[in-house]
Image (cartoon, rainbow, N blue to C red; front, side):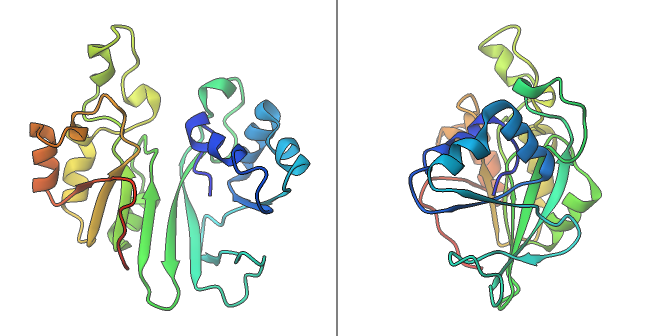
Amino acid sequence: MLTNADLDHVLGVLCLREGAHTNLYAPGAVRQTLDRYLGFSDILSTFSGVAWHEPSMDQFEPLETTEGQKEGSRLMYRAIELSRKPPPFAKHIPAQGAQSVAYQLMDAQTGGRLLVAPDVGALNDDLLQALSSSHAVLFDGTFWSADELTRFKSRAPKASEMGHVTIQDCSLRLLGELSARHKIYIHINNTNPILASNSPERTVVESAGIMVGTDGFEFEL
């Protein structure tokens, strides 16, 4: 399930090219960007093969099982449009269709809902509704502050220019006020001080009931 066409979000798929037939879920604009600039479909079709699926932006639909069947699938999903701005390598593409989305997944049997939103540049009504209705939230924790990168490189872009809200100015309060049982920051840049377990910023985040994501973490809905 691809949230956008940024290289750090998609290149891992190519590492799976020699495995089983690949089901890829992505908005049409994301697929077109990947095929035009990276030849994604051609590469994958040469190896294991690929089937593209256009996610619904309106209602939950069943995910296909490994056998390619939707009937009886417990796992439902929908996409939430976040941005129509293409990735930097495709900046000349006209803004047509969703180039960045979040995904909300639902267990049809238990009703448990999970929101995965690693690349949030702004809030909108659909995203806020999904945040309030989810039992677990994996949210964009890329930057702590707006000018974080300029401490390391004077001409570096600000967080907003890179398409990310910051923890300090937006998501700390937003997530802290949610009733979700699990609130976890993901997609954390290596400049973000919350990665240091003894930092003041880490203490603030954990005091708000939010976790810093780590590999291998598991939770139940």
